[in-house]
Amino acid sequence: MAIKVLKPGLATTVQDLGRPGYYHIGIPLSGGMDRHALAAANLLVGNPEGAAVLEAVFMGPELEFTEDAIVAITGAELPPKLDGEPRETWTSFKVKRGQILSFDFLKQGARGYIAVAGGIDVPVVLGSRSTYALGALGGFNGRKLEAGDELPVGRAAAAAKEGRTVAKDLRGQPAGMPTELRAMPGLYWHRITEAAGNGFFSDTWKVAPEADRIGYRFKGGKPLEFVPREPPFGAGSDPSNITDACYPYGSIQVPGGTEPIVLHRDAVSGGGYFMVGTVIAADMDLIGQLQPNTPVKFVKVGMDQAIAARKDRAELLGRLRTALA
Amino acid sequence: MQTRFSFGGDEHIFAEVGEAMSLEAFFKSLFVTNAVRDAKIKGVTEICPANASYQIKFDPDQIKPDDLLVELKRLDAGSEKSEPVIKTRIIEIPVLYNDPWTHDTLMRFRERHQDPNGTDLEYAARINGLDGVDAFIKAHSSAPWFVSMVGFVAGLPFLYQMVERERQLQAPKYLRPRTDTPKLTVGHGGCFSCIYSVRGAGGYQMFGITPMPIYDPNQKISYLRDFMCLFKPGDIVKWKPIDRAAYDAAVADVDAGRFAPVIRDVSFSLTEFNRDIDAYNRKLDGVLHGH
Image 1: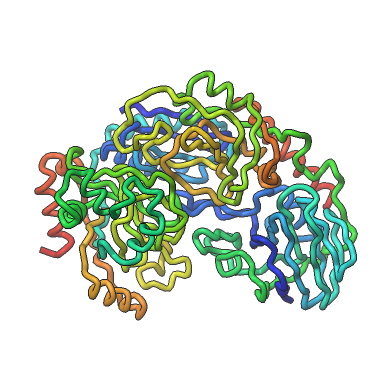
Image 2: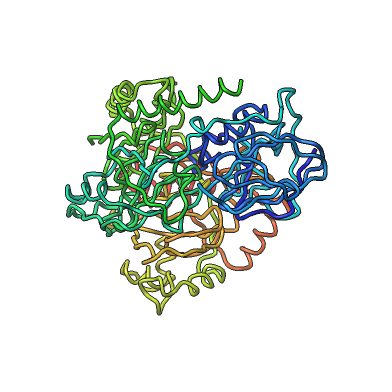
């Protein structure tokens, strides 16, 4: 069984739950930016939660199926069409051999997850099928999909059924405007003045056009004022420079003190810009669903709130598993 | 050296050994991260040494953040007692300095550079008080360099020059980063040199290019079959200036699968190195060339 790529979409990649263990040599986790939606798509079609799916951003691909299949689309509101006929998101449906899956314009969110019963069966590289495009590693030939690609699909589980659906309250998508991203101040927080720190959390930021799997850039807030210093040897002369160090996933670097960048699943593993803190793990999925120009506020939290939010997110996944068991 | 610890969200602990770069800070980050690896702490998922800092990623569902912090502080304090000696490798990297490909790229991005009327090499020579490009190449290639961090992108080494601080070459990054850098460019920013493992954006000054692949996700290159990235923190690099003919021959050898990099095992003592840096570097050269 295979899927023929007729049109690739904007930047459609094969992703699973990622490739931990190689960050120390610059190979990031990768994997779905919205992990909850990725797991939901897989559970809908009877796959293991971490099977490989397609992640489509802003614009869906056009795919032809060489065999019958069960498919589900989750995440962004990227309305699927089968031979031109509308289908529901967050609901598994049947595709017959020769039928063409395409998508309408994006209505909400940013990234759609296309799961096929059996999973996308590209080779496992360093423990994962995820695409790390910057390193030309994993996924389909280490890159985003192109027209003419043929994606192998694994054998579907007996549990694959059409008509299964995920209730709205189990979808875990961003709600409300502006989107709130909870962040723990830290790392090089002491490099900015108290007023700048307060401004960072009280300003409303907007997602900049430079927003991808490596990181999301934000603009529109006040520039950060630095505490004066003598540049340490090796750091560089700009007040936002540090001696090149490792970057946490979700860390918020602010080159030149102007536009914050939150690193995501394909993070550059290190560099020479200071960071004011880190978006908590529970809110990383939400970032993956933000379109450019979306207003965002960073909300200051401590470790206890981060751990509580983490439990909430895990419980949501638990309820999703129960609902689709 | 008092390490500063900070939580990076609920899944990372960031440890700054020194604000400034030094071999002492790098060695400490290497020793502590080795100790963390040996301790096999439950819940630790990534152990990342960096130039003068390190970072541990963990799963807070398996270990409480405060418990891990206590354990890290214990290992960090314990590393002070370690004798600063490592068993490592010295690797020769051939470099075509002033090559046509980085030259073409740096001309395309000239308006983003501090000195729009010169080349990166001319600029770096001038601000380091050296008499022209040849003198700069000599200063860059005569002493070895430590791989003090691997990262940014897959397999990219950050390299720290093994000379007294006052002799270390320094250069700022581009005023605005380039959107393109040729693969295998030898670059320099701050006090660090690097080799770009993949083509892409970059802000370091560009000095040359090596014919020797350092990252191969397909693992077809003979010396990258076991693992796709060549470098590990703690490796020592010695640049070997080559001319265009030698560069072309090396590229042909790589393509034909017969390129054999010069890599030797070596033991490095920071104490002995600090005692007489030039003599120690000559000894390292001897190890590399088998005399």
